[in-house]
Length: 154
Image 1: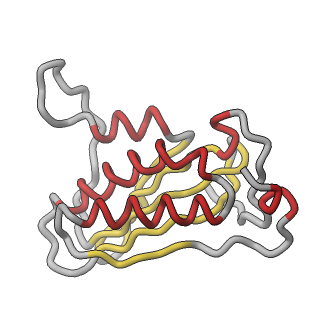
Image 2: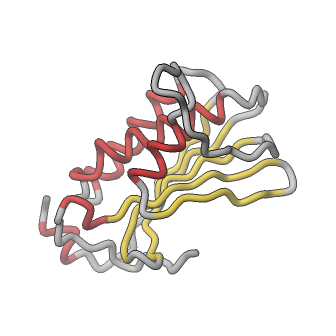
């Protein structure tokens, strides 16, 4: 971790990318997350954040939408403190559901993983789709890093 994050005075800018509804898009989303966190001096969050973005993108791919999905990483402050929000906007109004997958099931654990890794997660419904988001706490790994000028969020 660099002291740049601790002393940075300008606000961090969200990192955003539009991706096609293809399984390969998860790789590009992980790259966005990894690069942005490294630039922000929060590389210690990369492993958890990459898992979360992979699950959110995978769920969006399954919707069958034909336009591009939007993946964004942004600093936020929520009830748990400073966090990095990973959000995926897709064109489907179908809401994700947290289910209890059987031990021998080959799928169905994605949102359970998101629920475990995130301090908060949810879905914002929109007129033509939804945004599914998850917040990863900045101090998750015992870091003393801070996210300057993170706007308050729900």
